[in-house]
Length: 121
Length: 109
Image (tube, rainbow over all chains, first blue to last red; front, side):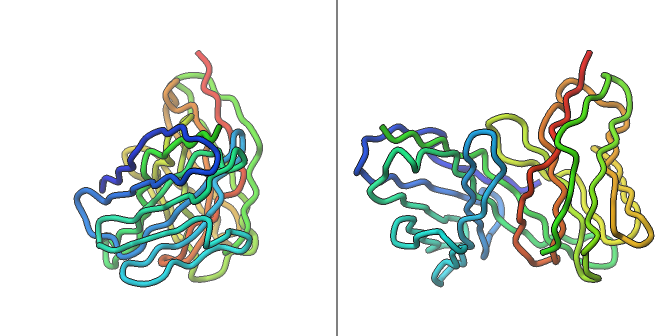
């Protein structure tokens, strides 16, 4: 299957600093990527949909000025957590949607990155 | 996207079949059923998906009821490495995935 990588896999930063997380599709081009956040013992929460060459679409309650998303190429989307605070500590996961051929028709499949663990002190 | 309901947790003996149910009574005609699993501290992994026919791949089988209001993921011979949180998601083929709470499957020796 398609491979999605994330960098870094973990990061520790001081409160007030900004952190950039990269999401790359390694062997395919992704016009659409998704960013999720997961707190301990909770499910994944969709933050935003990242579209190559256009502005991201944010879910309700997600601050677009705090979580900056850039999808400048078909293989790279970045999430920048600006002015991070301890409550932003979480597991951030990206995914890419790929169109695959299956039987008589094509279908879309999501491939997820391994996640980035952010700890804000 | 249609809402799904899954049991919070299930246990299964190693080597036995694990049957994970999912209710999606409000599914619409163009929505697919997808199953993913997440092993601790990793990104979710795609397992299988289907529209209305039963599906099987190297990982699992998916049984969808005729009215499409529920489905069951079957792991035919569970191993300890299958211990994970299993998510059932319904959405359109081009839609975003909204995760519910999933089922924590614990495979025991």
